[in-house]
Length: 258
Image (cartoon, rainbow, N blue to C red; front, side):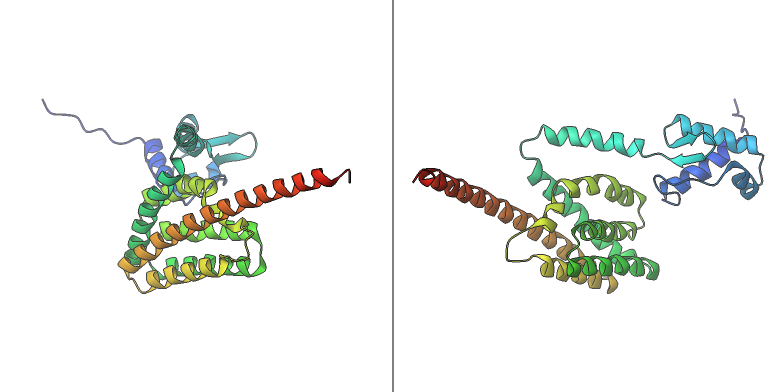
């Protein structure tokens, strides 16, 4: 028996286009998408067809409908995904080692792919965040340094032109960064790590610019090794500092009645 081929509903076609734009990051998380009237005019379809497609995205939790203010890209799917990972890490005694191991492999792979696939526009975006990172380090602005660092690595992930790496970096790797690597911007030892961090970022950018995939992967991985070692050194230093403070406090207690 032959199977009937039915034409695709207009609303389903609109839905497919919107889903593709959301996946590719054309509508970033938290942003307001164009209103129904604008989308209907762009696609050359009726507003009810657009409304039906938007309704599906709302029911899926991809969009949030705000009364009188249109539709916004929801953060809920990513938050649900990250929550499950956070629960897993909270139950795992060796979670930090595994985070660095996982991140080292993923970022090495992303750096290599970015070197192979990057465009001139990708390079400009990566260099933009590199300069912001270097400026923040020079100024000692820790908040800007952390955000520029994350954005630099996100630009590299986007330069792979693989939506899975882009979303992985934007969600999971950003969460892992906040749990581990962000601590390096708050080091208090006299041996300032920022010059080395800036050098690593500059070297990574140059390897991607020169399309040297092997070098880019090696730099990305060695950078993470350095970060993990520095953070451990800082923790050891803090432990010694707290111990010394306790001993000093005990000394004061001994002589307070002299």
